[in-house]
Amino acid sequence: MGPGDLNKALAGLPFISDPNLIMGLERSEDAGVYKLTDEMAIIQTVDFFTPIVDDPFTFGQIAAVNSLSDVYAKGGKPLTAMNVVCFPENMDLSILNRVLAGGLDKMREAGVVLVGGHTVSDPELKYGLSVTGLIHPQKVIRNNGAQAGDKLILTKPLGTGIISTALKGGAAGEAAVQRIVRSMSTLNRKAAELMLEAGVHACTDVTGFGLLGHCAEMVEGTEVGMVIDAAAVPVFPEIREFIGMGLLPGGLHRNREFRQHMVEIDAGVPEYLADILYDPQTSGGLLMAVPPAEAAALLKKMHRADISEAAIIGEFAAAPKGRIKVGVTNQVKPA
Ligand code: CO
Ligand code: CO
Image 1 (spheres, rainbow, N blue to C red):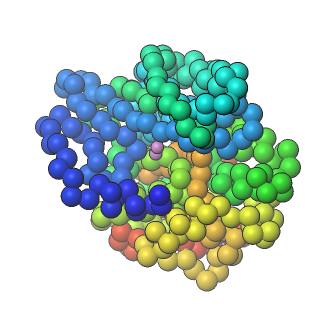
Image 2: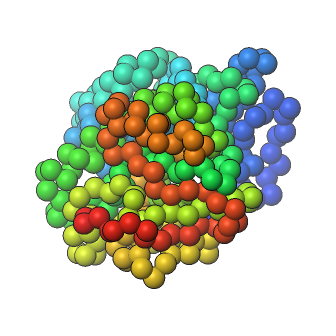
């Protein structure tokens, strides 16, 4: 199923409206939010996928971090989680034990309590979490609240899809894999805490639709557009080499087909950089619209908190409204 297919599948369904529903299926949001009282709302999200690394414990960590990310992106505090597991009948149960241990490790780090789960037999191993969190109903951060002039901050480098593809193709070395594993298994909790202190207008996390796919969600149907400096976007080393070898994930092409009508890429942007901007990410960073007066200080705090690759990668502008312009205003960084 590609991007856009979900919208087709949901088309015409009689969704249930409720005055307490703060965030639902009406637009591409990261999580659902439902108001319980004037002071409290619950955030709910679910995510699970097939292994992208060989080690079961590491896979469990990454899947859990990825699932928790949507709660952080909305400004919420994750509280409880349930395991979602698909497991092959003939696979060794000790593998599942390691996957669940990895997930639990990150739940403990996040201060989240595991309260249950569900397992089904499936030819392919899959794992993730359904997460419930808490948030003040007035403090939910939407993906579409950006204002012209806001700076766009991205907190993790891009390229996990391309490096995973290179890993499957036997081209990625240990160092490249270690780098993406470290990034994918890092909680977005600290980045979210700093974001809440600074006060931001919008946020989402970068996952399967790639940077430009999630940028598109931030401007689609709004009064603002976005200008991205491709040279300022943090990317993992060696990406350029893997792209040169044709190691592009299928999802990258689907992401481009789905969103390219909203994107203008300057002729000066090298093709490999344009490719990276559509690379589907697993457990990617937060992407936030920060008031211009706060952006530099927030970035500095992130760097001090070991979110060392965080960068201002562009800004929101009155034009092109509802669209994204990608250029290169700095010297292109060697990749
Ligand atoms: Co998300
Ligand atoms: Co998600």
